[in-house]
Image (cartoon, rainbow, N blue to C red; front, side):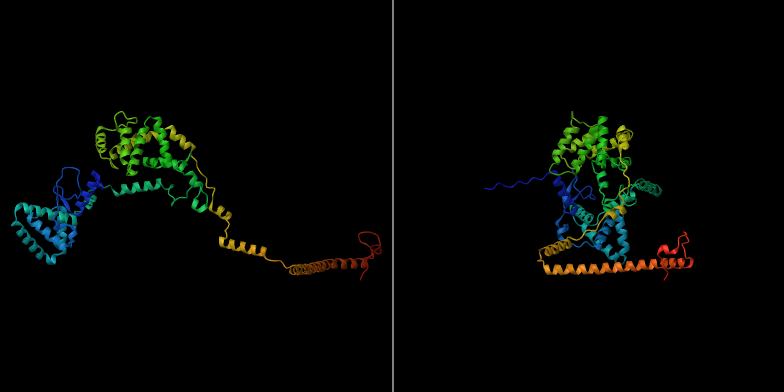
Length: 437
């Protein structure tokens, strides 16, 4: 015999499933009809009549919605909710050509509803209202954005300009990275210097830690430096608790309960080894939420600790010897790896297919048989060509020398014939063995 399969549904799954049923219109709230969610309290809900279920696939037309709004306007004597009044005015302007028909239908339905019993009439009104809240929801987000407190454009633009000026030298689109861009220069020094847990960071990297507390925590190397400072001030449990909350929020769902229990025993329980200092109200909310843990159960305590470190520890860290020592030892890479220099060193590599063909041709030449007669004839032909070239070069050299020496030879003959003796000495011309002609 097979054992029956038992399904277990926890509270979070049941709440999510209930919110889905409310959003689709299968059940509806009785008190706060605008919020289509399941509240974890004693709020009352009712099942929608099957006539208004989405499975009926009734076409949701603006004419039907206009009739519904006109009927509510008659019953409420012109007092509608804000979003309903806006829809009513818009439909009245758009359907002005058949508004008399819409009002007539609304009066007829209102007259028919008055003939029903009061409990049935109230239930049907709630069902119809829930149907139109699902298919024509109120513009809550638009109203919230309109009512949201805003700042002047000059203030917001000034903050934007300040942000751009601060991050200008750190933007890879506006300034080049040091020592060079690895994708352009084939130099990986930039990646080596900016590894997550590098021993000595660069000056630009350390400079980003001073921009904001979020920048410091987002850098693993900066977080380690900040952790060293907190240990010296005996407040390292604050950063450890914040990191544990981040691990719970972004970690695996299977280990969520174990992580929540570990965080409670380590940081929140009485006599915990790394007890954190938070106010009583936040502690009460956190401990109560840990009975049914989820990803965001520690948000209140995490925000409290984050603001405590931001307002107190972060300012003292920037003035501490730990940070000053890091700034002193920070590396400032020079721009020595240029694109032009590396471009000169590059050599275009041949395709592997061409290299393979060249190897095959070389092997074929080495494996081919050698004809001795052809080799000897080729060598003799090369010797003849070399001899002809040598004779031509020698003849050209002799002709050039003759043309160079002839003017001097002619000058000497004329000189000795005219003077009969050497102009440079008293010896007769016969001793020089030079004759004219």
